[in-house]
Image (cartoon, rainbow, N blue to C red; front, side, top):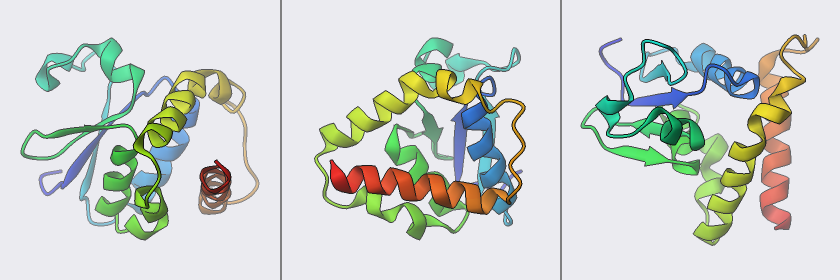
Length: 145
């Protein structure tokens, strides 16, 4: 993939993360989003000036020029890269940045535990519906906070 505009650094050992990655991969029709599994034995974290533990602690993304973003901004850029920036645009609306980071930190801390139950779970609806529901819950939580 040579024409990527943003690279998502994800935890391939996290079932919850893999659901999102798979959905983004299917939405990545033009190849503008690249993916790199931080948990892979072949992954070299020093390319990004960080340790594997730092990169697994919170989600990171990289632009072709080497700029690194973290937390909620990663999702904004990943969704923009696949042409779905409008879906996550509300996360860029005026909300205290500390609240944004607090929510992302809570999700990052609980993701392995929360994802453990869905490892072998088959959803009888398509992923788009599943992710839309998850996004609606997230947006609802942001509005009520």
